[in-house]
Amino acid sequence: MTTLDHVLDLAALPAAEIPASARRIARFSLYDWMVCGLAGVAEPLAVRLRQVIGAEGGHPVAQVFGGPALPARAAALVNGATSHALDYDDTHFGHVGHPSVGIYPAALAVGEAMQASAAAVADAFLLGAEASVRIGMLLGAVHYNRGFHQTATAGAFGATVAAGRLYGLGRAEMRAAIGLCATRASGLKSQFGTMGKPYNAGIAASNGVECAALARAGFTSAEDGLEGPQGFIPTHSDAPVSAGLWDDPPPGRFRFEEVKYKLHACCHGTHAMIEALAAAKAANGLTPAGIAAIRLRTSPRWLKVCDIKAPRSGLEVKFSYVWLAGMVLHGIPTAADTAYTDALARDAALAAFAGKVDVQGDPSVGDMQAEGEIVLTKGRMLPFAHDLAAPIPAAVLEASLRAKGRGLLGDRAETLWAAVAGLDRLSARDLGARLGAA
Image (cartoon, rainbow, N blue to C red; front, top):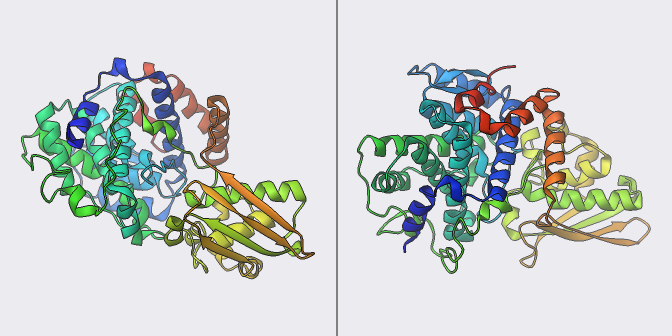
């Protein structure tokens, strides 16, 4: 079987065969996605997108965060970008991408247009997310390291699967939709630190809706847009990783269940360092004045993503190891998005502390790990390390996500949690109504 055959099987997986554990994580991601989207409605890019896309008109069938309903493709674009505006959404390290912001907007928009159930939206998201994870893993590290943003590239295929499932595409139509996505998927890491990064998530969602809708209307495409001659994989990766990729296909195993949630409002590549330094600070009563140097070892992958040495804006601070290390040691909350102001990027104390932090890429350190040493002014050296891959019990994860929601939205977050908890009683339109302005 080809990768496309596996993806087509995944897209058609009966709902009854989806394991409860995978469905639970998909609903955690739904809650997290809605929280991030509602918290991002006032961001400049979200406001501008609502203005520009809203002015185009069209048949309003799908709700957008903080605004009126729009056509499905337009709503997917706005909601994808808005929910990624704070860069506070989930991450899957298997393919280094953010599944929810590229796929849930497509699933919900089409779900509303087709008057589907909310549960069907969550299931379509799960299958689309699984497809994006496996395609992202196939593309391999070379794809990401070359400069492609997999939230937008692999994510677009996931959005296409989710939208196509809700449109009721047959196998031939889904094949065509994926082929069309192969010529549409795009997104570059050069946009990191600008409005272009969250826009990439919106592009993925919009592409998914568009490609699925065109296939539904009878559009044709390449027979195998993924691995066929001059398809997406051979043109976007010189070293695809196919060995063992489909040895454990769903429903046997959902790799999406390995998704990680952000509990700090910055690039996920910095979270292991933040957790490690926070633990060291708490255990040893550390102060900035008592630290002579910090030597951080991280995956080389992250050096092109979150190693901005002198951030010029609050947004760039989110991608700066040296500034974030200073925030931890100075007691500035990294979980509060409101902390990441442009003034913070000009903070003299953080600028001085940044000079103490040395960041090195180490191939032995994984994408979810950080390790190093803190050198005290008195000469003592404290090792630190953290691995985000450590499992978190479902009850603890739920409590953490709900706390994050309350921190961003106040009491409204509990209303959202109640909606997700009662998802089986809601329609997609009921769910979409929760996206409007408070």
